[in-house]
Image (cartoon, rainbow, N blue to C red; front, side):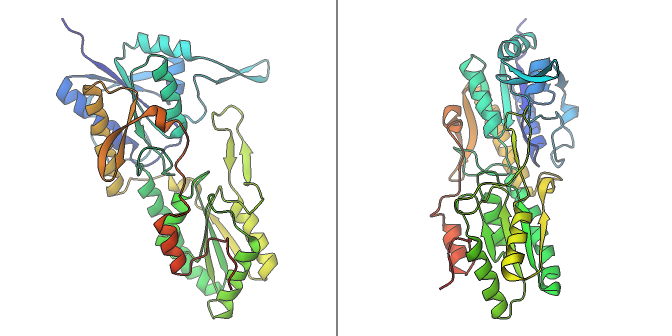
Length: 367
C-alpha cells in the first residue's frame, strides 16, 4: 500500500498577520487534492532541532484565516547551522544540521514548506543544498525579501502604523508639538515610506536616505514660520544620520539576527527639541505592527501564495519560493532570495511623489 505524502510546515522569524492564512491554504490544497498528511513543526527551526511537531487535520485549519500570529509558534533565535547552547554558564554555538536531517527522516517528510523572512529563507536554502526538498513562502512586515514585489504582513503593518499616525495628528495640532512616530524597518524603509505618505507625514526618514538634523530642524522651523505649528515625523528604526550609526536597543547573542534596533525616535526627539526649542514627543509603534488580524488584502495575498506553494509541491519545484511579480504568481529561486534584502530604490516613484508634495526626507535644506 502506497504511503501518503507527508508535508512539513514551518513558520520562522518574527510573527505577522497572515501566517495562518498561508498554513491554511497550503495544507487544505494538498490535503484535498493529494490526500497528504500535514506535519506542523512547532516553534520554527527550534522544532526541527528538538523534534517537536504535531499533525494537522482539516479541523485544525478551520477559523484560522482571520487569526493573527501563527498556530505553530515561531522562534527568532534558532538556527540549525549556528544553534545557541549554554554550557558551563557560557554561550556556545553548534552546527545541529545533521540532527535536523535525522529528525526530518524520522518524521518521514517528503518536503518542507518554510514560511519566513530573509533569515528564515536563507536557512531554508542551506537545508535545500543539504538535500531537503524545500518550498519557501515570503513573510515579513518589512517587505524586504528579494524576488517578490510584496510580502504578506506588510499591508497590515502599514494599516496599523497609518492609524497611529492619524491619531497623533490631533494631539500634535492641539499642543503645537513635533510628534515622532517610530516604525519598524531594520534595513529597508518600506513601512515608513508607505505609512508616512498615507498618514500625511511632513518628514519621512528611512534607512536608505541618511538624514541631516539641520535639514530636519530647518523644515520644522519653516512650518512654524508659515503658521503650521506642529509637525509629524515618521522614522524607520534603522534610519541614521549622515555619517552616523543606527540606534541599537540591545544585543541578543543567541539569536541568528542578534542586533535589535529601537530608540531612534527618542534620540531624534531630543535633537529636534534642542535645535528648535519646540516641544517634541515620540511614539514607538513596535510590536503593534505585528499583531492582530490581517487586512483583507493580506488574507487574499497569503491565500494566493499558499496555494502557489502547494502547486509547487505538486510539481516538485523544490528550492524555490512562491512570489508575486507584476501581479503574477511566480516561483523564485531560493538562491536569489538568499542574496540580500530588497531596499527602497532612491529613484522609487513614491519618493518622487512625496517630494513633489513638499514632504522632506531629511536630506535637503530648504532654499
